[in-house]
Structure formats: C-alpha cells, structure tokens
Image: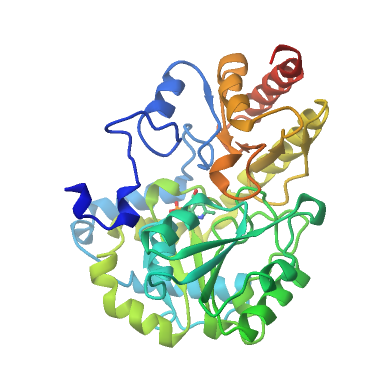
Length: 401
Ligand SMILES: Cc1ncc(COP(=O)(O)O)c(C=O)c1O
C-alpha cells in the first residue's frame, strides 16, 4: 500500500515498525519519563503539572453542562472568540482586522500552519525557511512536495536575518518565506531592521510570508513586531497564532490565522474540509483566558528566572555557550566544541537523567546544539536542579568521551 502513496509521504515513520528516536513520535520519550528522567523536550508550559487557571477551568465545566457542548461551531470558529481575537490583534499586533472576515479558528496552530501553506505550495515551489527552525516547517514543505531552501542564521548576528542570505538563494520558483517569530529553537525575536529588510525582499520578489507567532507572548526586553503590520505586508502575510505557549493552554488545541479578505475567502471556503471545526468547549473556555489574561504573569515571571539561570549555569561549562534567551521558555545551547550533539543528548539521558532535543532536528545550523525546554514543571527549582545536573555532566564529558 505504501508504494501507492505520494513519494513525499512514504518517507515518514511513526515508530510502528522500527524505533524512532524523536520526542514527538512513538512512546520512547514517555518511557524515559516513567524511568525518572526529567523530560525537557516538549514545548508545553509547566507539563506535566496542573496549571489550568481557575476561571478557565470553571468556564470549561459550565460549557460542558451547556446544551451547545455536544455540537459543532461554525467551521471558521466561534464568532465571540473571533471578536476577542480581533480586539487583541488590534492592541497586540497593531492589525485592524474584521473578526468576520480576517480571522479563522483552528485546532491548534500546527494545523493552522499546514492550512496557511497548503493553498499556495505546489510541487517544486521553493520555500525559504530561516534556520535553525521549527521542524514542522520542513515537514510541511516535504508533504506538499515543495523544495526547502534553508536560509542560515548565524550566532554572530544574534540569529537575526541577513537579507543577503535570502537574495543569494532567490529563484523564479521561490514562492514563500516561512518565519517562526520569535524563533523556535533559538528564541530570537526578529528586530525591526530584520523585519523591514525581509518585508522589502518579499515585496520586491512578489512572495508570500507565513509568520508563525506561537511564541509571541513573552519577549522580555525585546519589541515584538508583527510583520503583517509593516507597510505593504498585510496583503501578503498569513499570521498564525496559538493559545498553547503564552497562555499555557496547549491541551485545549486552539490556534488561529489572521489574513486579508482574499486569502481568507479561500480558507473559509474550504475550512469544513480541512479542519472541520475546532472543539466547541475549548473555544468557549479560551474566551475567558482572553478576557482575563492576568494568569499569564505567573508564566512570564517563572520563565524569566529560568532563562537567567540557564544562561549562568550553562555558560560556566568550558566549551559550552548560550545566548540569553530572548523569548518564551526555550534555551539553545551550543555544544559543538564538546562533540556531536546526538551523542551528547544520549549521554545526558544516562548521566544527568535529562531528556532534551538534539539540534539536528532543527535543520541547517542545528547540528552541535541542544534545545532545552525550560518551561516544563511548575516549580522553578526542579528545572534549575536539572540544569545543574546537565552542567555537571557536561563538565565531565570531555574527559570521558
Ligand atoms: C514554533 C511553534 N509553532 C507552532 C507550534 C504548534 O503549537 P500548537 O499546535 O499547540 O498551537 C509549536 C509547538 O511546539 C511551535 O513550537
């Protein structure tokens, strides 16, 4: 049967017939958790601890008891939630969008990213991805039979965009840029210069931008600029957002897309086939989080403590270097002077009882790096303790390898 599939799909393995050492497939990662290993590879706020704010929990229970709970919402999403999103978008993204025309609710932002790219990408289209980047960006292009064109980001530039790297690689087949902003895994918040240069490049070459802003909420001292708000960009940008990271509501599976009328008309037209509808109860409950987002402060404070701790603890290890995370709750660690990142990941499971992500999964520039999810567990001390275990193990690594 497999040979009847598109070649682009035949390459995927879900761990049913072989061991797949990836955090997001198979059950090997969860098994490590059962063995007492600290799981710091899933970008899921405070997992596995209870972290649901009371007002969201109460609304979830109310929604469950209401007659609507067993029924669909419109495929494009709950109108009242769309209004709250448009309101937030006005203040946060500086976008003046019409909730009935420019917003669609999706079951999480992963499906939104697929939906944002799918109408545009045909076999052979070239998609530029500043890398290292969120691995699903590569997977999506592969599934659509497009061609990935990685645009290298450099630590020396603070991982900001260098437009020469784009210009060198643009061809008549280039159709889209997919930007993860702030970036996962590097945490970079792209600055005004990077984004203005990118928007000039995109307009000059008549391209589309898909901008994934799943990590937009906590950008510490850095200004968060939404590229769609820059001159000439709303018409050609699809902005993808989520309640998973900033609000810590990953289990609710709610994301959304903001785009102009022309693009959204197509999305509204095929929404029922592509996404069906997002969970009714989750949409109602998430509205409470938008109405009173003060609970997010707790995440913010905690991530700030953790990023400074990671920066200090890991930079004390000879031959390891870390830039202070600029956003969210990830940490990108350069271990290239110590050795191979896949070997180091395996070693840290045994020696430090910590499971992280190997940088090779994040594309060009990922090799020789580790991604740590600092946002796991409610207690800062648990994370800081794991960081100390990692640092101690890494100090020993050069002598034993
Ligand atoms: C950069 C980025 N975008 C999007 C997503 C998808 O999040 P969700 O589908 O929970 O909204 C993730 C999840 O890890 C992510 O890291």
